[in-house]
Amino acid sequence: MKKIILFIGIASILIFSLEGFAQQKPSFKPALREELVYGFSVFDGKSYSGGFIPETEDTIYLIAKHNNTLSAKKTLVYFWAITGKYMAGFKSLNEEVEGTLEVLKDGKVIKELTKEDNVLSFPEGYFGEKSLFYKGEEALEEFDKYKKTVENYYNEIKKYYEAQTEYRKKLNEFFEQIKKRREAGEEGALNIEVPKEPQPPKTPSFYVTEPKKDFILNLSVGKYQIRLRAKDETIVEGSEKNIMVFTSRRTGGIGYEITPGNRWTKKESCNDPAMIIYAAGENILYFRPYSQDEYNELYYNKLIDPQNEGREDNWKWVHTSPIKNVSLLFFGQNKVLEKIDKKPFYVKQISGPELGYNIIEYNEKDFPYQKPTFEGYQLNLSSQLKKTGYQIYMQKKDENTPLSKSERGIRLVRKENSQFLYYLSFLPLMVGAIVFIRKKIRAKA
Image 1 (cartoon, helix red, strand yellow):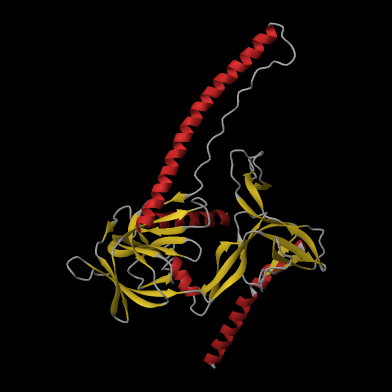
Image 2 (cartoon, one colour; image 1 turned 45 degrees about the horizontal axis):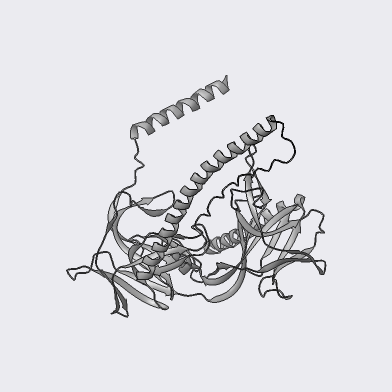
């Protein structure tokens, strides 16, 4: 009986709370305000990243001696509490603000920029890892080249469909001839030419964005200021920003992107040579080696997204380009256990309630109309391996010496003991809590 009364009481409280909540009719629509922002496309050490800079950010970060684009726009900006960042409503308002962009150093104007045509070209396709920047006439020529390639492709597609129709027609005639001859009693080899199936044309291997006009900045390391001067010679309100141009502290490092076979969507990075790779139980790991440069953490985070955070006294490695023509060597027990070459792989979804996937070695015969999902070096860490220390490193295919800074340690952890890795991750928090409590006690004393 007490349980029933308690349940009725809780239900009544919930009902009254919901009624009060409904009467308040809270509005989750964020407040919009019109402001001047800068849209950007900046070189990030490997490719180009885009976004916008709201009025709340007074400094723009750029990598030195690379082309970067800015464009002043009026749009609607609102604060999105879920991400804790300002968002732009370009679909509702996206008005270009015209003028001349002035670049200042030590208070003096050193450059006056007008908008120029520019494009991004992706030699390996839109989802490729490499992109090239073109400006002016070169940009228009590159886009024209891409446009003609696409037009030729669609013309070839049209011819291919016509050839397919003709092929089916000839194939039907071929089978009809065989049928008639066999019905007429002709046996043995029938000297009839088999129609050849036409092959589809190859899709364009590269992609080029449509030309657009922006201010193009290419500056040396240092601190600058920018402002937009309107046609009437006045400075556009809200257009003044600081520019921090920086470069890498170290170059020529080697880092790895690691994809666990049992967690395809959870890629990991192993960039510091001192880092250890821990693997529990039986694992298949896919490695992708990259050249990398080291940048200031705060500057780089602000480069990618001006609303990001970071520490100015920290440094981070950034992958710049994939390393090619190398083999992965798996070393342990004082010898090379395996030499692995790069292979293409295809990720195939598993149908049914499991909602999983299989990673299969790719070949055109089994996947005639598909492209490989990724390429990498497959390392099978068998459960039969002794629980001891192992290493990996890269080696040029035409050399017998390992690449400098490519070595990484691997530790195999028994699956039943792997939970201790999670406990270790709490150790810094525990130490911090102890230090905090001690300081509080001393302050009270």
